[in-house]
Image (cartoon, rainbow, N blue to C red; front, top):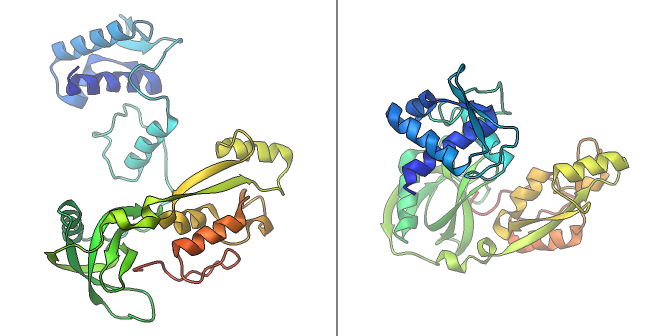
Length: 302
């Protein structure tokens, strides 16, 4: 099946599953196909999934049947919610999304971090061509209070839920570090690479944080927290790269002493706290940080 046809079949299923109905005009408007082609696509979908939709001659629309079964899309609610988020945040326009009816929604916004498009393109090129690049970087540590030119060999990107950084080998400090994209003020020339990303042990290895509901919650509250976090046995593992461990712990509220926090605000704890601390020390994601201390010095190149 050609990619374009497959995309349109997925679109038909998306509209039927999430909005309950579709017509030819929806396909024409979304993909710019002709009316005959839209009719052909709907007929093909009905042929592939005959129990999924019926045509209402009065409404001139196809409606989802009660016994609807997904055939082309994964049954994942986060697919829908991620689309809703991108539209709500203005990353994708409504016209570019697959929504016919957009539910009212909002997100807890954070200030948009300014990433220079020239910087991003230059870093992408360095990764693509496996080369190093000079960057003028503004660190927030006491050793380098002013912008400093340094050479890095980037190999990956990381996102902590608020900010994007590039993971790179630092030729100045001879180690792999994180460099926030907004703090790269200028870029210079490309040159021969330093250490390959394959040598970045912290990026290429994972650690499991064993989480469970806060013991201070009632049994019923613990059950719903377990359901919320997908913990069928009352506990579960969150597998993260060592290089991303600090960010994940911070986001989950596990950097301090969560078991001592108000359980109605901090819903989970780490069962393997000692192992987590050892992994955090190994990852060097935050200099001198311990789980009982929520004061952080910025990681790596930050």
